[in-house]
Structure formats: structure tokens, C-alpha cells
Image 1 (cartoon, rainbow, N blue to C red):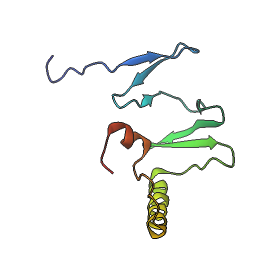
Image 2: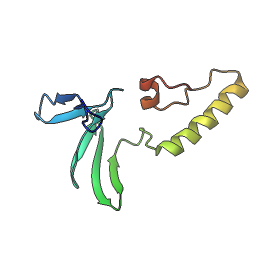
Image 3: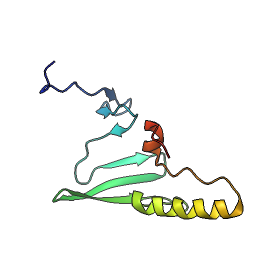
Length: 108
């Protein structure tokens, strides 16, 4: 294989829809969606593609009130605050890595 040829990514067929999806090596499911299409996370969280413009994707997220939804950078700030609070109480601090970083085995 020359350097211009990419190895095909592993694919998985959805058992219900029959749709092929790409699977990254770290276990991340990669889906192609169009404006108006949605994906479900569990039974209670629906994520819908609302707009795609100038390299940005606008998502709508429907989740129960008790399910926190944050952009990753905001979540990191919350975790940093929780770490400080836990250390001041002498408790074990939360893991600062995102689920994707934990799956890839990245250091904290």
C-alpha cells in the first residue's frame, strides 16, 4: 500500500436500520447525518442536526432535566472545580479526562 492509499476504516452494520457506520479504533462510533436527522443516546437523549454552515454544526439536544449537557470545554471547567472541592475535603478527585480520552488510554 502506498502512502496515498488509506486503509478502509472498520464498519459496523446497525442491527435495526441496516445502516453502515464507521468505527474508529478507540471505539468511537462515527455517524453521517444530514440537517434534520437525529441520533439517540440511550432511551432519553435525542441529538438533532439543526444547521451546517461555514464549518460549524448546530445541534439540538433533547434530554431530561436531570441529565447535564455541556460543551466539552465547560465540562472541563466543572470537573476542575470539582477536583478542587474534593481535594479540600480530602476526597478522591473526579477523573478529568473525557470518555473518549479514557477509552484511548490518555494520561490524566
